[in-house]
Each structure stands twice: as C-alpha cells, then as structure tokens.
Length: 325
Image 1 (tube, rainbow, N blue to C red):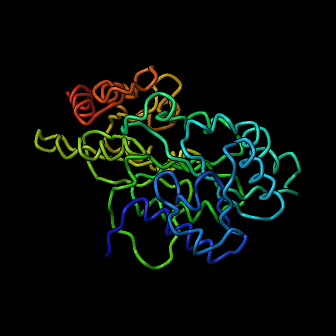
Image 2 (cartoon, helix red, strand yellow):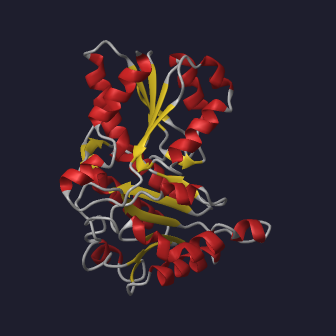
C-alpha cells in the first residue's frame, strides 16, 4: 500500500468530498492563495475556485458564524482555524449556536459542519499558538470531537466528519503533518466513536490519542526490551467515546495509564479515568489508574522548557514501570 503524509491524507479527504458533493466548501484565513498555514490546502483555489474556497478576513468569529449559518441552510462547510488556540474567538458561534441548533429546533435544523484546526506544541510557537483545548470542546453537548494520530485515521475520520449531520471539531496535531503512513487509494470512511488497538499487549494498557499516541507506541516498543508488554489503545474520537474498547483492554491487562499532551488539570484524561472506574472494568484493576498529562503551565517558547511541560516517551516508560512493578 502507498504511504503518504498526514497532511496529504487530510487534503485528500477534503478534495474527494468536495468533488463528491458540491455543497462541501472550505472557509477560513489564508486557505486559498497561501494554501493554508501548514500547506494542507495548497492548490485548492486553482482546482475548485472561489465558490468552494472562501478566503476570509482575520475574524474567526465571522467565518465560523458564517459556517454555522451555511450548514443550517443545507451546505457542508469545513471551517479552518489557523491555530486551535483561536477557537476561543469563535466559541459563541460554535458552542452557543452550532452545537445547540439541532436540539433546540427539535431536529428541524441540522448543522453538518467541520471545524478543522491544528493543535498542540512542539514547534516553538509559544503560549498563544501551542495549546491543547480539546477538553473544552468535549465538554459541549452537541459537538463531536476527533483527534486522529495516523494518516489512515485522519483521512477516514475526516471524510466521516464531513458526511456527518452534526458539528464536528477535528483537531490535527502540528507535529503529525509530516508523519507518513499507509493510506489506501480507494474511497473509505471510518466510524466516528470507535477506538483502535494500535498495539496488543498483556501487562498494561496505555490509553492515548493524537501525537501523544505516537509517543506511547514508541514507549511501548522500548518497554518490550524490559519484558513489559503494553497494549496501546488509540481512542481517536473523544466524543463519542468508545468505552467498550477501553474497558475490554483494561479487563485484559488489569493496569492502565492514560496519556495526553493537554494540561493534566481538567484534561480529557480525567474523563477517561472516570469512565473506567465507573464501569465493570474497575473490578479487574490490579493497580490504581494513573494519568500522565501536561504541566499546568502556559507552553514556553524555549525548546528545552517546551519539551519539559508535556509527557515524553521516557516519562511514559517511567510511569509504566511504576504501575507494573
């Protein structure tokens, strides 16, 4: 099977859906002539023209509001926010309107829109361009939240999100854009709300998502040399959450480490832990469930400090050692 980058997979998903359905359009800042802040939509303006590629002024509030309105009237917009930190500027449109319209109208209005945005740190972009705010979005009833870690998952889940009749927030970690992986050329979609066991194991379960999932896989490989068999579960979608796959893995291994890049306090890892201890899987635990999240600090600009505030592979290895032994 061919290998393409994460960025290419995202671009392919959008291109295929825009060709399949003329109601799908891309809206946001610098997405046309510039080709997107990370180059994902390069060439789209020439291919689809200004009717499907809508360049906007620098106002997240305006273009996300326009996307919500267009979706309510039957279009399928993909709104791209240049950095996920700027979701904060569009929360009224997304949270107070887009997420609630279908419920408040008794299903008379649907809001089939996708909000795509790069998240996470690791690029030296400092405190205002490096946050992981997925837990904020996951807290809002009516929004689906997706954070894929591989090119294959990114393409299949983005296509599913575009076809979904509900608003979906689709986070793409900046450090994943250059990651290569196998992606079939034929059309496919992946179900929203289904986790994936990326690596089988028997001693401990590592639950993660997005770029932290890549670190978890590398840590699991390192642990094998110590005789520790780690199972790695990629939740892929935060909302809806696949509790069954997580629970089955916990029952199998009896030990759990939840890993994410976002700040530990209020992070989505706490929700995963709660779902485990409130389920039947709790009675299979041989050790307390542990979380490994980012420090409760703004992301520093200094690369050494930036690395210190989020979990790294060696931190995951050390945490698993403690849990197992």
